[in-house]
Amino acid sequence: MTQPLFKVANRHVPDCGQPPAVDGNSSDAYYGYFENEHGEQAIYRYDRATGEATLRMGDAGWERTYRVREGRPLGLVLSGAEAAWLQACWLATGALKKQAL
Image (tube, rainbow, N blue to C red; front, side, top):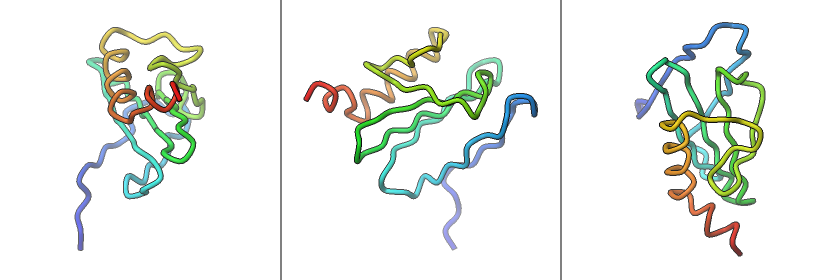
């Protein structure tokens, strides 16, 4: 049986909502994970079919999804480290190139 490559537990309090279930084996999406120095977690999702990128963060409420445009989340302020990670995810998925088309 194949063991998971990566596994992480939710570190946020219940008031932050239910974290998303992520299936990294799906070929239709790319996922990125980040945890800052305070233990706040974030998940980036890029839909390969639509070119849409989204961000979810535990401290902003797991149920809330923020669209990512030009490597930045709409309606959400990030720390420097969070912004650098999100930009790296954006560039890695080719979202910037897809948006320019």
